Length: 192
View (cartoon, rainbow, N blue to C red):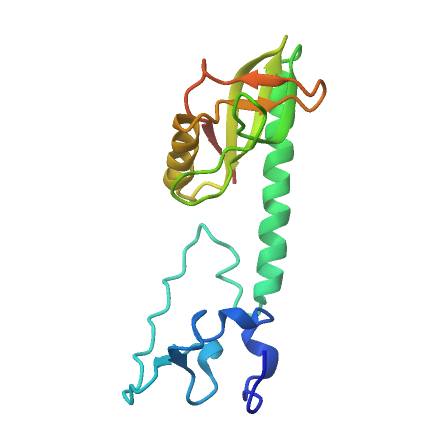
């Protein structure tokens, strides 16, 4: 990527240079060089000033928004750590509830030949957070999330993949395919 001159905010707009100009540098231009700093880039030929975006109201359910000095990188790190903690708690709970089963994490939906099936709408696969397997049969699939995240689209994606033939997961221990036909959509387990 080449620039005629550097932008005033430097790399403050982020390291993803392809997202600059809302991902379309041919039709978007950032006249004052501050597009990544809170102002939206304008369409080429549009001389009107963009409207300032309204900020989201603070939510008590998202502690990272209540810390104005926290960087986006710190927020992402904190969210990843919280996600790992939730998944570890879920795994322990499932292992206690199903002591004779194995609890496997991050298993992709596959077809009868073992190939990962992609959603016909998004062209992406679906990874199940946890699958409980006992004696070669799947007992349950679980999606672990925070208390306020909407998982409607993710479950809809799961069901589209299942309808497209993605009704198997590969057992990590045996390498065999486990059929999920007897199960409905993943149970959503919400944790703080």
